[in-house]
Image 1 (tube, rainbow, N blue to C red):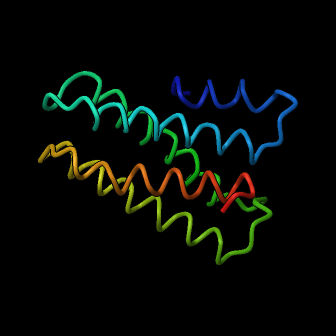
Image 2 (cartoon, rainbow, N blue to C red):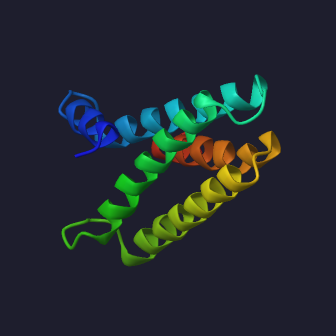
Length: 121
């Protein structure tokens, strides 16, 4: 199990509601990406670390959408999976052609979904 998945699993055992835990994980990923964008010096360890964390988080979400016991309606599951595919493509694009402006869509997606999970969207 990846480090991100282990951290997510440990965190999910706390008293917080699972949706709030997911929202906090998305906000953490967004903060890391925002820090890279705000302090851009080119592709560096921080960029790769932030992209890796975000990619692992979205891999977990995408995997959860595939399980038969997922209580979400099929349309919601498909939408999350489609967003996940977009996130993965944007991540690869950022790694191939690094540009801080490309982080905006990843940051916005994470923040918007976190807001929705927290009931603020």
